[in-house]
Length: 133
Image (cartoon, rainbow, N blue to C red; front, side, top):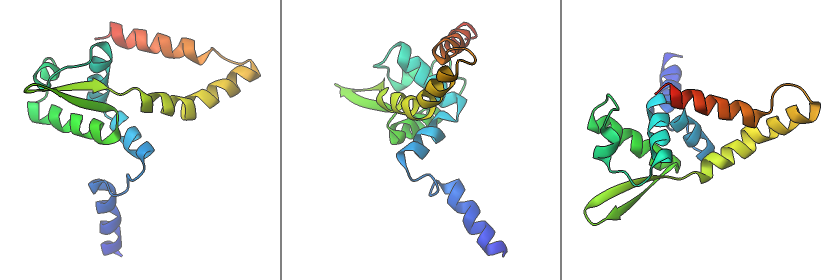
């Protein structure tokens, strides 16, 4: 019995469990450090690793690892410009997540006429996060 539990634990920890693109996206978005990197790339894309490390309170290797996970999820794209590797936000998957997971609930909620408009809520949340930085 213990052997089976260890196998199940290792499958989740090693990432074998996260097999679909949606799983990779949600796993990437689950970490506040990765969300902060995405926010910084949303404000201004085309940043180098050194630029992204500034003010992150983590090592260069940790930022590189987070960027690798964001890249594996398809949330970040990289391009070479000479000797510099530039990182850009890929908003396509975020829009797809919104359309599938948030948009349909927003439409259902708005059709019932209850609560605030989700666009307003999301804008207020984004504004409060920007002010808190």
